[in-house]
Image 1 (cartoon, protein in one colour):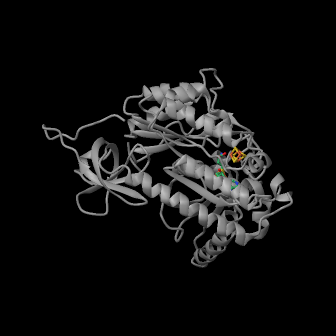
Image 2 (cartoon, helix red, strand yellow):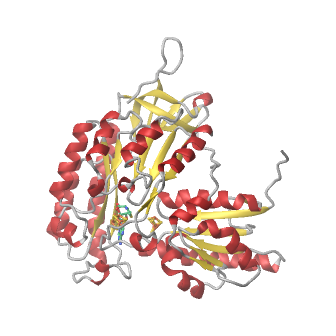
Image 3 (cartoon, rainbow, N blue to C red):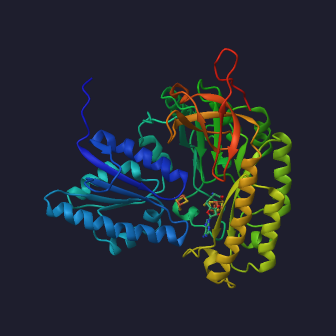
Length: 457
Ligand code: SAH
Ligand code: SF4
Ligand code: F3S
């Protein structure tokens, strides 16, 4: 079959969460048949897509400043007789599409997270300079039906979206408004996609969803645990992760699967947000600190070596010093492998934005620094505790130094080791000898026959 080189250059910049990373990959796949090949710089690109995030004010503002820069590049290209199409995708597109087009007239089209399968049509319309330039429908189902069945991937790990949207309406959060209601993909379609990933050498999938553990196969084959069991049957798919979960959807079947399914990695991102019941209530999280801790205990009973990560928000309206100290106390009790923490950001249209008791910026800054110092300390300690252990490492790529490979431990830590290139895409045993805040280093454990020993964790 003749292979035609891409004639047009596509630059995609991705902001926000892993779901956006997945969506960006899929956008590139939708655009490939039109002759677009991905490039790593906006300069000289025929099509620039900004895949945006609306979660915090800073993320949103970044988009407008980036658009200002790209507009200049577009003008330069136009002066040279070429063109550049600018598209804004993702959650800012969904939330403030009209405003984007008003604030930045250089934008040719705006496409929401559930409508990007329409990109080819929107681009054609933009080129004809007429018709609708904004697509922000909410039909996730239609999108997945319209996306190419085969994925094109190059790495040994991949994201796979299985669920979208959120019905939880935490009072601080824009996601229910930008991504729509909770919706799950049929297991059959997910398995087909996973199969195609495995055929291309993928060994580890991370199942994605804004509330991934709310997953329910619409065709009735069960929840996330059942899906993971089916995925684990696919030859080559040795590791399964999922993110992000909500404590309310962590059911007994899923917890049990953590103890039974060796493909499930012993690392769980389970955001709690605060250690104060008063704040959790005001956030509409639907769980207390005690319920969260009881849940963690159950999970650890099923899988004693599981490492837990979380998200925390500091400075939510009404958060007093004592509430914040309750958060620090919870973190101390948890002993996280890693965790994310954010200053509360007031999002227009969300209930918390209108609450009294907004916390001054300097107080938020000071609390965040204290929380992050504690989390950093825990991450360093968790990593250091791996020294002396032998961990199965999935090697992903060459490292910076000659003869070195970089991979991931079951706990998602980056691991460096001297290893032959043929081990890329393989899981090999590495004895950990060094640890820093962000990664581990070790030596390959050789069996008497000279082959790296595999150990299942
Ligand atoms: N669905 C996931 C994550 C959604 S957004 C969940 O429920 O956990 C990722 C994280 O961003 C959230 O967990 C929360 O900690 C943070 N976040 C969301 N809205 C925010 C806001 N308005 N200000 C600060 N952080 C926020
Ligand atoms: Fe946002 Fe809460 Fe839904 Fe997570 S569960 S996406 S924080 S509303
Ligand atoms: Fe951001 Fe949208 Fe993800 S708001 S965090 S890109 S779901």
